[in-house]
Every structure is written in structure tokens, then in C-alpha cells.
Image (tube, rainbow, N blue to C red; front, side):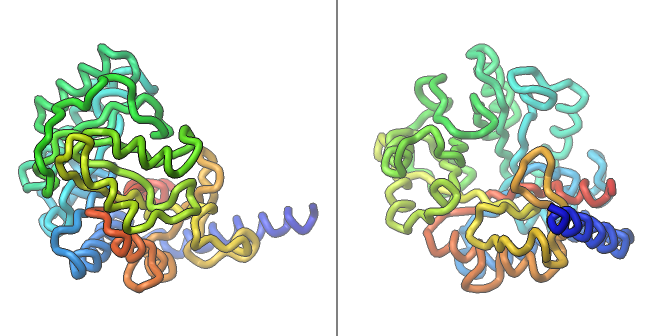
Length: 323
């Protein structure tokens, strides 16, 4: 027990010293550069591969203000932006997002739309009237949206019975999608086959899933291909979720020795999500795990045949700014 306690103290001291050394960094530009690198690498394999960062909308403008000048290089590198809690879920699930917060986010999202970047919104609500309202309000703004019953993103919603704006069109571009399904946690399904069959049996234009079933078993290229046809026979897009602002201790790349002897890029554990660790995302060691080589996470996604990647924890810059 004493050894563990001393190891934890050493880890925290190490993290504190590393952060003090980097207190003059531009964490926002560091994240932009990270996304730019990911985009350049992915599009070198396929120019049609989509890059969609989730949240962190302040990166869209030079000064991080909703009326600021757009960062054209960043907007050119991405194909869409994801935003959670726009109309429901900001303070609590199934509760309307405060108007001031909603309008703040919309100001950035509209800049994205004006620069040819699609907006994907995930609201968290389960009451049918609120679900209806979420879809109507997002559609009025021209956003593609998904109303999730659970923040765990572990179910295909029972309401509405058919996806909002359901269609049988062939969807080959993100701009053609009129709805999407966000299903990255398969815990509600007893087997991988049941999970994949459930997705195949839907008519969503875009499906966003994890590369790994239950976090450990990588889906094959054939399995991904089988998801690219809607039940009504129209084609659809399939995107992979990938966290780039935190390391997850159940991923293939994790080394248990890091808890007592962490690499320089590994920071503190996220108290809200045990097993997830903040990372100094600007460091080469972490970036090489994410992209740029044949063993990288992104290369696995590309090799599996996904049409795009959904980048999470983009707003990690806030954590380091506030330290």
C-alpha cells in the first residue's frame, strides 16, 4: 500500500511539473494543429475521408469568440463539426439547454455552416415531445441531428419508430445525410452479431460506432462493409469514434506500467470517467499513437474501411488552460 501511495504521489508531482513547463503554450492552436495533422494524414489515403471534431467549437474562430474571424485553415481541414447538448442535455439530460448557452454554441456552428462544414448535433432527451422538438429545431437550422435516449450512447432509440427524415437515397457524401445514429457502446447487446444485426436493420443515413466491439475486439473490414447498406437498400456512411484528448485504459495501446511510470504525455485521470486519462495531446508520443504510422489508431480505422472519423475530447484545451 505504501508503494502504491508513493507511486501516486510521484505521478501527480510529475504531472504538475510538466504542466508548469507548458504554461505558456497556446493549447487551442496545439489542438488545431493536431486535427490538421490527422486530416492531412487521413486524406492522403482518401480525399473523401471525413474528419469531424466534436465540441470545442471555440477553435473555429481566431480569438475563440462567437463573433470572431474564422480560422480558415482549420475549417478547410474538417468536413463537419459535432456538438452535444445544443437543445437538450447541457445542464441535465431531458432538460432544455439554457437559451444563452444554446445561442453561444449556435453562433460558432453557423460559422462552420457558412464555410461549408456540416453540423451534427447530439441532444440527450427521452420524452417524445422533447425528441420531436429537438429534431424540428435542428432541422430549422440545417443541422443533422440525433436525439439520444442515454448519454452512454448504448441503444437505438425506440422513438421515433423510424429515423427523422428517413429516406432510401444512396448517401455517399456527408452533405447528403439527413439523420444519423450514434451508437458507440454495445453493452445492451448480448453478442457482436446481435449488435451488428441491429445496426443493419436500421435506415439511418450515417452510423457512428466504435472501431472495437466492447472496447477490445476490432471490427473487420467485411463487418464494416456490411453496415454500409440501409435496411431499405440505400447506401450509407459509417464513421468511427476516436478520442484524441484522453487516453483510455481499455484500449489496445494501453500499457499498465504507465500508472506508476507514465510517459511524458500522460496526465491525470478524469474523475468523471474512471479509466480515462488526460493527455498532453501536443506531444509526439501521444500523436504517434493516434496517427502517422501503420500501427496508429487512425490507420486501423482507415484499413477497416470507415468513411470518416469522429474526434472526441477536442475541448481538452480547456482543461490545460484552467490548470
